[in-house]
Length: 123
Image 1 (cartoon, rainbow, N blue to C red):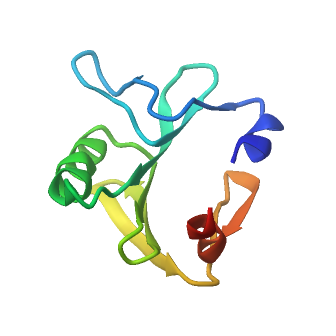
Image 2 (cartoon, rainbow, N blue to C red):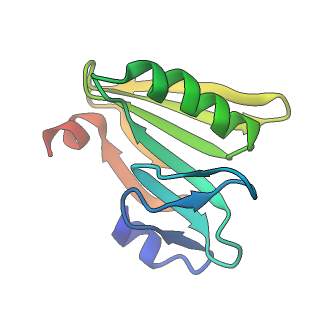
């Protein structure tokens, strides 16, 4: 992801678990965060689902990202080696797809980024 973002002047990849403000009273530390370079507004958050705290990762955090209209959310689930992709729309977050195996994880607004799910979990 870092190499893909490096060529884009409008976006910035933050260090893992960097505190990102979602509002004046709410901040999160996503496992991966891409923000708009000019405003620092969160564009893409990726959360790695914890085996120990599945509910917080899959329900609570998703609801908060939805309330704050984060444009993209990736829920990375090592239990099943898959990635749930959510896109923001007028009424919240909508499941765009679930990727696994040789399917390719990508984001059209970061055109240089492309990674098979198998390669993601091989790391």
